[in-house]
Amino acid sequence: MRPRKYGDAGQAFPIYITVVGGLLFLAFAYFAVGQATVNRNGAQTAADAAALAAAQDKRDQLAGAWIENLLDPVKWDEIFDGAADGLALSCWRADQLAAQNAAEVLSCATKGLLGYTVRVRSTESVGESIVPGTEEFKSEATATAVIKPRCEFDLPAEDEEEGTLPLLTCKDEEWELDPEDSEGRLPQPEDLFDVYLADQ
Figure 1 (cartoon, helix red, strand yellow):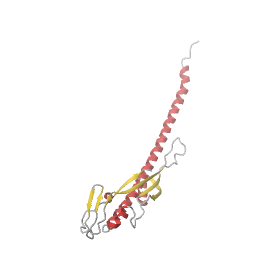
Figure 2 (tube, rainbow, N blue to C red):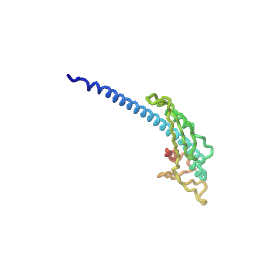
Figure 3 (cartoon, rainbow, N blue to C red):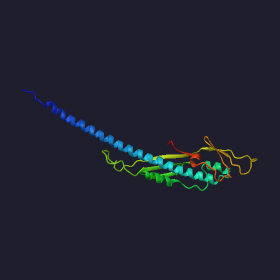
């Protein structure tokens, strides 16, 4: 009897098809995971940007309040603690930055007097994949940004000349403020306060 020339090849072909099919499935699965990761990272970027924008807007308001009360150093402590009068909520800036990063704000709230916590959801879904439901899934993410005063000062002593302003030290820079010098250079918001993302 002559041996069958292609017997082994015929048996290996179904195994080959099975292996290739399995590899393709894994490839599509990894692709789906990659899509979800990109979507989640996009949502986190949007949350970070939104929280920072809200905190920066409040920083700018605090800096404005400090300038308005420049001649009343007694109020400076409250302002640097975030307790200035007349401050507006800054969540509108969070809405803007979230929208610019393909997300919508689900919640925006102050965190103490010197921070904002923002939760967003991506406006774009993960997309179609071999994993059921991904075409409707949208990632959510949360971020908190805080404001930190950069400056220190000592109130003038009682025997000092009336109208004397304290020496303002912001990190390594000193500001000698002259109430008589209307053209004098004043610290900018970024000189007075740091804004950064806080660990969740």
